[in-house]
Image (cartoon, rainbow over all chains, first blue to last red; front, side, top):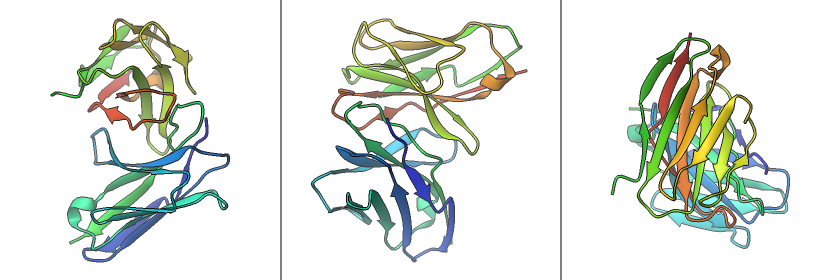
Length: 110
Length: 114
């Protein structure tokens, strides 16, 4: 199993701005998932992008995947204070187990 | 549906005590997982169960045992708690482990070992 590494570790923006966070991984994947964790809560699945997809949208979320660079990015457009949370990527490989990195902590200031 | 339910939500133990964290899911999922989360360390996989009757080690299994009691329930046991096991523990489930299905998480158990 492999772990995704999120970058930056922390991000602070104003409400209404866009937030971009990145994920890098080391070996081949079947898919890559992004999760959100609000303070003191369990992780919540946001979006899954398969290895043969390059971009995927869900509401204000846009995820890209570049398998040649072994990287993914999560873009949150028109951020809101409620988007304040930690965001984790999880590369999915043939082992099936998901290993999470340290995440990106996003603070959206009102 | 309740999803994934963990009990207890909070627990304080003394070093050397034992306890079992309980987890149950009502989504008819085949696979279940236990993670621990420490500040600055992200989530680390302790054990997982691909299907009823099977369990496998994750990244940090030492000091823990698990039981997949039935399809719904997956428990984590600390036989002799140590301060290093102070952490927040999350249980999760998914339809299948082999095809990287999305995980559904419980709300966590905050454990302190004094």
